[in-house]
Amino acid sequence: MRVPKEGEFITIQSYKHDGNLHRIWRDTMVLKTSEHSLIGVNDHTLVIESDGRRWVTREPAIVYFHNKFWFNVIAMIRDNGVSYYCNLASPFLIDKEALKYIDYDLDIKVFPDGEKRLLDVDEYEAHRRKMNYPPEIDFILKENVKILVDWINHGKGPFSPEYIELWYGRYRQLSRK
Image (cartoon, rainbow, N blue to C red; front, side, top):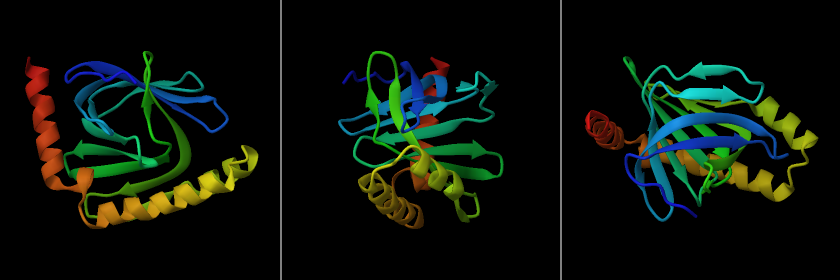
């Protein structure tokens, strides 16, 4: 697996279980890589949907990917505080083209006041039947929802204020170079 360097820009591609491309983020700045994780930032980043629709992210967002956990985390830095969008997804991999993962529909949104919402349960169930998610995937995803909620409840990793401060500060340093 190719390891991008700090300050380098990469593309992120999400797919669905059936192999179809779901969404592309262009030019995500890498802030840190380790053996198991990648931290980056999107700031006014071009996003291309599978239907060709294009849009640009509105605010800086710290992105967290791990190659052991079945989720990724997007911490959106807004005027009213940090909101989190957590995708239940396969662990990531990186090749010459992009950072890639499979999006499994379920999402958890965390609002600045700490409120949590599990989203897209109906979409998950419809895709689980349509794309024949194996029972093992269903089990893994439900277990990772529990892990993710535990991280949120205990301010672990990307859910700690120190994490956001550290990585947003590093992004500001790198973007001034």
